[in-house]
Length: 374
Ligand code: SF4
Image (cartoon, rainbow, N blue to C red; front, top):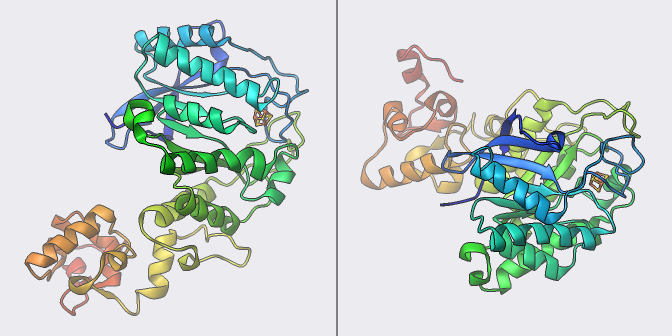
């Protein structure tokens, strides 16, 4: 079972029977194969000694708090698991007594679940700010995914959101250690013989950061630290916090950032190929891949029969699987019309304006089919 889980596709909270139920949330998530899993996303403690400007759990805010002991929480989760309410666990915590001590509590909980209760399902563990290298290693020996939220794309932006968090020493360092460990230590030390994937999250739209800043850091995280996912969590103002009067983030901006980040991660795009507006933000009105294609391929369409993988991946409507199918097909025969591309799983309405098939633009074929380009 591949336990990489797409936690971006989480929705549909379920109700959980518990006296602490408002601190427990079950979301529907997906494995890469599309298999649904129910993911309990929760905090071991909603008390926190830090004061991040955007956070409902910040110190000093009037907010009900609850703290679980590791064994108490592990038993509770196991009940939910056995009752078929949750299949997997995403466990984080507010910070109490420092990041190292809080990380120990998370590790204790994970060890009880894995070693004492024999839980073999999906486990996403958070690194706490300031966690030590040995703790990072231990988390990686127990979890399927590990993560820490960078919150902002650089130290200057973080200072506007969470002035008491250290961008490099507290947040980035655990991700760097995780990648060093994956590279240098044999995977048989890891849970089920596979080192966990790593992820991070930014708060979107609360620190005046541009899309270029976010994507510059995203690109570096994908290439240098081999992160599997970078999440952009849209800022929502919380009453009784320093940012309570700041506007919420635009959800279309979030969508464009995800599209751009997938181009960087899966399509071989470089940041320099993305189109940014005057304020270094992606245009909201156009998909970033279409913006690239309009600029580079509309006047000089790509000959499909002679294209490389990299070139195919720059055409709207052609994804990594479709591109490989085209390359395979071209080894056997020449592709002359859109119906052949359609059979290979290509979205021909999106691709047609940017390609040639044996030297001919296939746009007219679309009109024969009664279709216009998407
Ligand atoms: S450390 Fe985490 S829980 Fe604590 S205030 Fe900051 S974001 Fe909230």
